[in-house]
Length: 415
Image 1 (cartoon, rainbow, N blue to C red):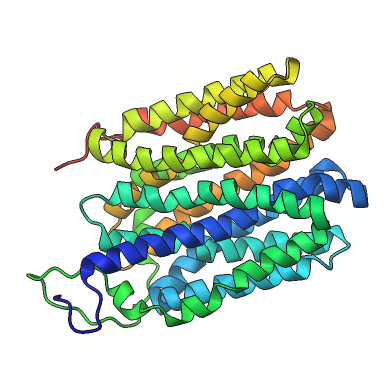
Image 2: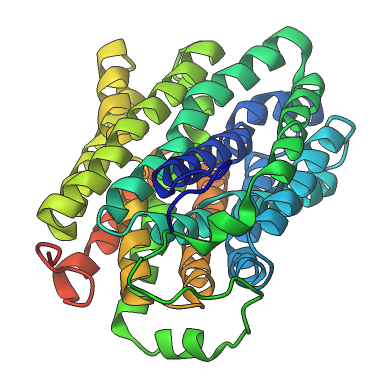
């Protein structure tokens, strides 16, 4: 479709879509991940058990995952404007309210349930659908850049939250974080969503009307009968379990190992910064060399990063921490854009977002179980090492489908 007066070109709109996806991933996921900085203040003030506090994050991830298929349906039916507005209102309001909370169940509801639904609406479920409509030849690379918003959020928002906690306390920190999210609302309301939802137009194809999609669960039922669907679900589930059994306790583990809270939060943020590079590179490498070698290399980095956590648990040192941040950080999130791209290619059509949302739900269920398991194992053993061992086994289970399922492990993408 040629640009007209006061209309952005396809190229300009594609860049706008990529920026939108990156920005909302950075803000939403970055703010959600700040919970790792709140663990110690909440434990100190209320005396809750580690598993009890970790369960808030588990509910957040569970709500994030289980709401993803419904977010996909909402997107397919009503479009991105409604989805993003809903996410901002739910998550922003919940975090502003969190500054007044005093009971664990209240954190379960506002930070866990509402936060999880909010980030699902702001995250990769709508992003994957939008990007696949605008970037057809380099989808993995574009999705990788959008996923990099997660790492940018960890780099910028988590240390910022730790600073707010140290400066004014955890209640003020929640007020500020919620206010930042709500500040995005006016921007969302003025974006050209009808044109964005339509996607890049093929000049040789008939122009299709942009309306409300007719919903049917039949494409999802058919997708769930395929090996590709369950292979992708396995990758997402065990990857998330492996990562989140580590992430939720990272800052607390480093503090108890002798590092200051700000050093620990900065290390967490630096790992997030490296994930920006790793995720973006993973998408490019998958487009160039294929999914299997790219994913395998990323899992090797993750596995070695966990080995370094064992080293840190016995011999805390700056060099071991730096190596952990490098290896774990560079691989963190690297599988996301590859799985998203495979899903978009394997299950095209009007129900694409719904199908991907269901696969994404498996990731969040794994993350929820990993987050809760990390706290439970610590309460039972008084150590983080058992959790590290569980994480290593999960890494092996996560990489397996790329070596056993031809449905997702083509050595090189077709030209």
